[in-house]
Amino acid sequence: AYDGVDGVFRYLDRLGAGDEVAVSFDDGSSERYRVTEVVTFDKEALPDDLFARDVPERLVLITCGGEFNPALRSYESNVVAYAVPA
Image 1 (tube, rainbow, N blue to C red):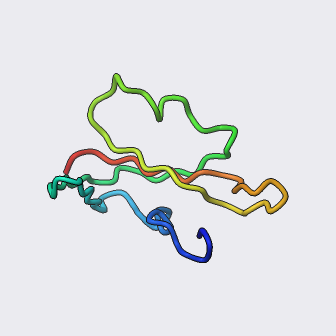
Image 2: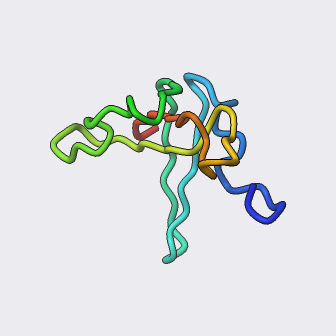
């Protein structure tokens, strides 16, 4: 949450394989994707291949996860949902 308001990915960790995600674009169109897996990574262990461009079409959604460290103003991990076109 930011300023007490949940973000769009607040419940990303509740997705599971087979769930569908819709992405809406500014032009009014949308695309549907099917989740293949949801994984939690330590911040320092986020895989480089998440940002690869030379892979088959996919959607990778990333948000904060785990415990919040107020001293660092950061969460301890990242939740990553992988999805492919539905």
